[in-house]
Length: 223
Image (cartoon, rainbow, N blue to C red; front, side, top):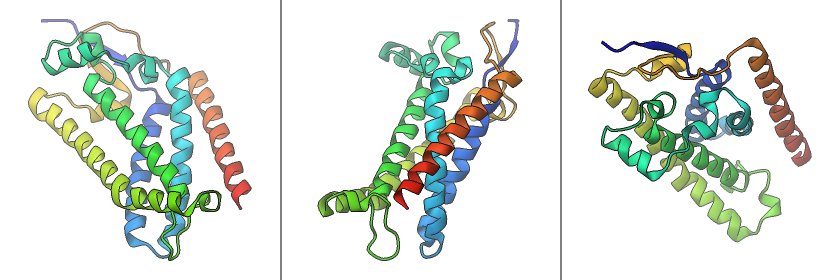
């Protein structure tokens, strides 16, 4: 029987980011479908999501070990090995190779969705704050992508993400949700844990505040 190790994989800032982003994405889709007065909240949620993405970009460089992008940048050979079930145990601790692709896809398409939203105009009641700085042709393309394509891509990616979590639980008996709640994961290899001390959390709070201030200044500039 192999020895088991309990490792702090997800630091508190990463966990809070994950759940806050999930709430914002779901709420943004709902408010967009409702329309009307709910679009005010749709824009607010967009700015909150922008703040979260800026934070994650920085945290991916200076956060806890398993939250850093460097910990889940995999070569094609490593991804193929994971698919065949022959992955290096260390590649399974944080985001595994397929999980990493999912994370980058979600972050990338979220950024694209936010950017297109800033340039969108439904010609009824919702106009993105950067519409005045773009040509009508660009605005039309951004609006079409934001409302017809990008939204569906994100819904598909989120659905695949949830299905993958369910599949791992059913097929492998691996609960991927619990570590994102508690921060800890039981693994077969004694690996480096993520720094989750008060000092690290304080650093995250400073970064998040700076990102929020940057987005707030952006909205004031557009006002």
